[in-house]
Image (cartoon, rainbow, N blue to C red; front, side, top):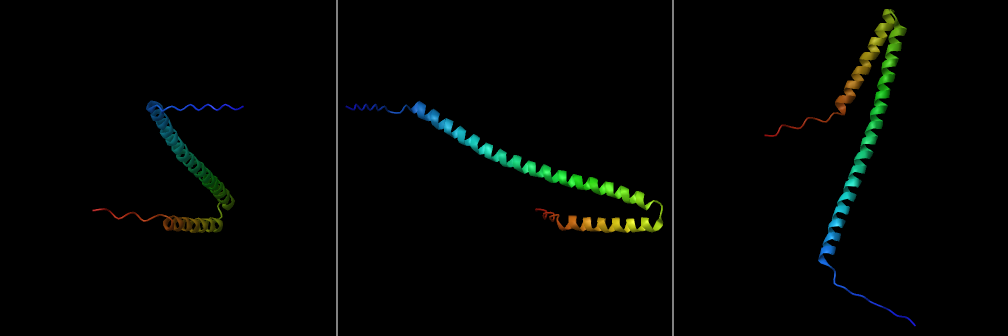
Length: 108
């Protein structure tokens, strides 16, 4: 023998309103968490890029110091080092100029 009992009540508007409010807040928190996660990923990538760039700069500076020491007072070696540095500086300036966006036109 089976007995089935059904109990029906009308929903309480206070409870449904409270649940709707909770769901709205939960959806808002979920959105913020997703947005914040993307910002954290972007920041992590930027830190990695900066670290790589900084390590490259340290290598460059240490290499430059070694080349200056190696050149000593030999005028030919110093002239070659100077020419090499000028070429590198020109290449760097050109790369920066090529990858720098143009300034926006002034608005009137």
